Image (cartoon, rainbow, N blue to C red; front, side):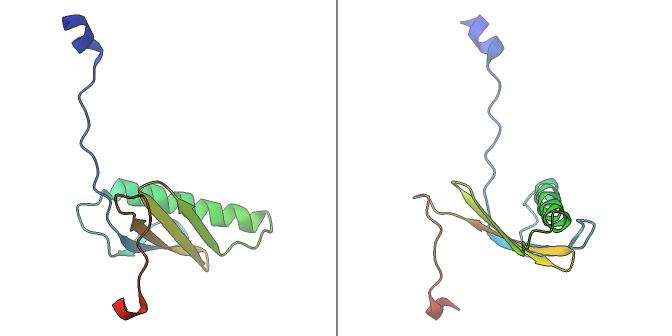
Length: 107
């Protein structure tokens, strides 16, 4: 059994996904965020860079893209283009895999 434990890797802790938003400038730098400080800044930067690059490539290809929506099983990413920068919304889904909807009474 010692041979099997040699090949197994220790499990990395799961990242708890939070809901929030952040804004980016043209260079992909984060200007403001409502995400908790426990959310990894490297992950925010990576998401932001992908979003800004996607909007920039769409503009280069002359495709009218002003909103980008990506759904993952545990997370939904919605990004809106803002004059070269972007506003990104992260929404964590609940355990059933559906994204909770806000009621107008919640606003």
